[in-house]
Each structure stands twice: as C-alpha cells, then as structure tokens.
Length: 458
Image (cartoon, rainbow, N blue to C red; front, top):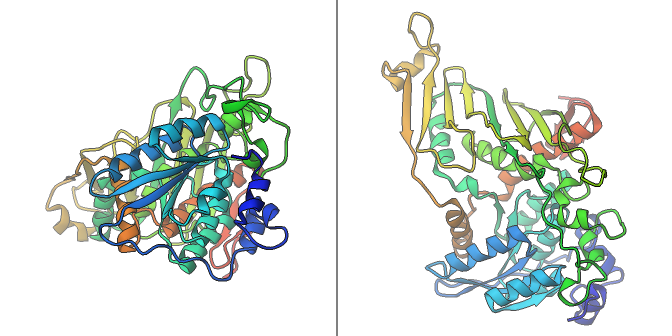
C-alpha cells in the first residue's frame, strides 16, 4: 500500500470536490464539507455478521479490538475485518492477529462498503474528525473516551448522530457497571432528597511518571518497513511540527492532542455521575486548578510534559448541585465516590476506584442529634435505619459495553453511553482544561454550546 495518504485518497476517490484532501485533515473544514445526504448503513438482520474496522491500533485500540473479536465470536456475531494505524508495525501486528486487511490511511477503511462499524481509538484530536466521517459514510461508531477534543466537536457529534441516526457508543466501559444504574434508581426514588454535591477522584502513581510509555527508537517518518510512521497524517488537524517521538508515543502529555488528566481519567468519573443523576446535564460554571509538582523534567533535562500531574475541578449545575473531582499522577490514594443529598448521602464506590467493582452501594441518612431524619419524608424509606446497602451485580464491564454496542447496532436503540450523555461529560472536562490553562472561571451557554467568560444572561 502507498505510504502517501493523499495519493491513496485521490486514487480511490474517497472524498469528492476541490480541496477535499485538506478538508479531511481539519475537523472544522471536514464538518463543513459533509455530504448533504449522509450514506445509509447496511440493515442488519438477526443472523448477519457485523463487520468492524479498527482505526488506531495502539495499546488501547488493540485491546478493544481483541474484546470485539472475543465478544463477537459468541452470540454477538461480529468480526474484525480491517485494521488501521499510521505506524506500520502496529498495522502488521493487528493484521496478523485478526487475519484481516491492514491500512495506514483510515479513509481506506471508511471507503469499504462491507464495514458496518468502526472502533476509533486514535489520539484524542482525531476522534471527532474520524467519527464524523464514519457516520456520514453509514458506519456506526465505538468512540474511545474522551469523546472528542473540543466543545464544538461535542456539539457536532451530537448533531450528526441525530441527523444520520447512527449508533455511537462512547468507550468508557465503566458506565456499564451496575452500581451507577442502581444509584440512578435510588436517586429517582427520592432516597437522597435534593442533590447538593457529587465527589470523585482518579489517582495514580509510578516511578517513571505517568504517560511516559516506551519509545521505539527506530520508528519515525524516515523509518524503513514496519518502522514507518506517517507523521503528517498523525498530526492531522493539530499544529504542524517536525517529528517528535515523545509527542507520538506519549501524546497524553501534550495539549495539542489531549487534555491530560481531565480527558484521560476524569471521563471515567464524570460519565457515570451523569448516569447516576438521572439525566445528563451541562455544567453552568466551571473552575480548575493544579500544577506540575513532581514530573517536571526527563532524565535529559527536557520538560516532562505540558499537562499538569495534579489536577482538580469544580463544576456547578443550574439545578443546584456541584461536582468536585481530584486527581494526581503522583499519589495513588482515592477518595470515596459519592453523591451528597440534603436527606442522605449515596456512596457508589467506597474505595474510590470508579473502574473497580463495589459489591453494594450505600445510603447514609442525615439525622439530627435527636435521631430525627433531616428530611422527614425519608422516615418511610429508611424505616428507622441510618444506613441501607443495596447489592450490586458484578459485571465484566468491557464485555457488557461492547455487547451493548453490537446489540444496539441491530436494534437501533440508544446505547449505554450515548452521545448526549457523552457530550455533557465532555463539556465539563474540556471547560476544566480551558479554565486551568487560562486561569479563570468559565460559564456555559447550553442553548448555543458556547463557553463564556461571564454568566449567561437570563
């Protein structure tokens, strides 16, 4: 296959019209150049095998593709038929594993009429451009978290799902855990009274410094054979730069391609919270802080990262409650994940690990010194008790999440982590990144999807 994505694109006529090649490499232009009538996908019968393409075959993408193959080998009836990455070694490895075709250019995958869905597991800055293109071509999308890189991309994804009627599952598999859905029911049943504040964390620690993944020294745009990397394609809509192995292999440390802790880790906290609340909500006001306290330099003295190694945010919602999140890449101690109400607190993960299993959720009533319930209406619900534990079913969340997506492809029902819920989680964490970088409080106009420096006028 040609190593020149532009030549390959022109040869196969995947896009039409003047300037289509450059348009495909910028999310704004690509969206503006979308076809007036998006392609319709194949109608899947109960016995039809679902054909899936992988776009982004790094560590995470390779793992997700293996899960699709495993789940698809059972009743889900799906298979991986194409893999794509800008790094030839990754293409070769996954091509051999799945006994399928391999590509360096994602548009060759989208150009195949036999592919029903794609897994998008590229660096964050490519998520929206590829997902938008895929839906326009009639493909359903399993879109790894974070959903995208900007607030405007979140809006476009939500609009495009509605317009094309494609299935889009955001790949934060923790949302398929039972505890969030049991918590949602408890809140809907009035077990906490009025919500006040949600809290959570996602902490890690390692001697190497998080995200400093191994670098293949022989790989790059001048690499031969399987060491070739299409750097120009990888940069895509991001700022043009000379080859930088650290940026390629450790992209989560750089603002151009990631939001650091907020987008890599907090998404696994914010998305479940939106499920627990009973409805996905946009934040009204967002502020963030933190800094690079530990992982400041590499052994050669160069700056270790652009993103902070310690980060926290506060998001406030118009319905009268807040969310407070904390994380550090240099300390592994979590705080309990819980939702505080005026009448009771609901703890979903006592150990604080949002991706970990908890055998039950716990409701703890607020009572006065005299033993009376702060909210009298909870007397009948707690029946004199101060604490209630609700059992939670243990689930292989990855299997459940992939299975849910494949099932929804057949039924056309809304998946567990649909685009609306995903977009509202994305807006909070993306605004937090901007708040940190700009050093100011930000406000959100949910009617126009605009981030503002001042409160929205009533």
